[in-house]
Amino acid sequence: MSDADSTTGDFDNLFDVLANEQGVSFTSLSSVPLSDLKDLSENSVSELSAGDDEQNKNVTVVTTKGDDGNTTCTEVSSNDEIAHADTIAMEERQERALDVSQTLFMAIGFVYLT
Image (cartoon, rainbow, N blue to C red):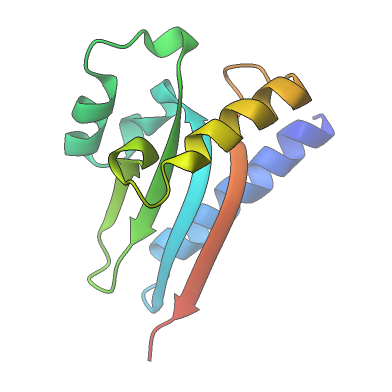
């Protein structure tokens, strides 16, 4: 396993723990292959993938697990306040020569609910 594969696995494990933990709410920002969104909210996936070529598309998304325990995913371009994150993700992908199949993890914030 390469270092990149190990890092991706670490992030996947972190997201699994946060998603399954009863008392945790989180929001993350990532640029992901469109095909990776199949495990998330079906409504979001249908909105994001409408007419796009999944093999060659990355989408910058905000993934949120709210107080109710539900996880949602929305494309950042649909939110004016953070739409610039998509431009940052594209620039970083080019600078780092990332393959379209690689996830670019950008940020996460989480809290333990009381």
